[in-house]
Length: 70
Image (cartoon, rainbow, N blue to C red; front, side):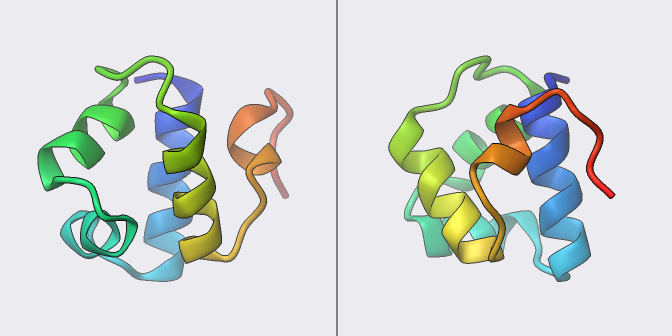
């Protein structure tokens, strides 16, 4: 799992949203969302990361930096 995928999963879980619901809101397939979270999509498209961040009310930087989040 890439750190981007792990951070997206952590943010989604903190927000209390299922993977399927996030995928629906971001307008991608559940399979694509799973691939992102599992690191199968190593570098997800910027527009998708942006939509995920907006949906989960976090910054894109929280997914993209290697620093630990509080």
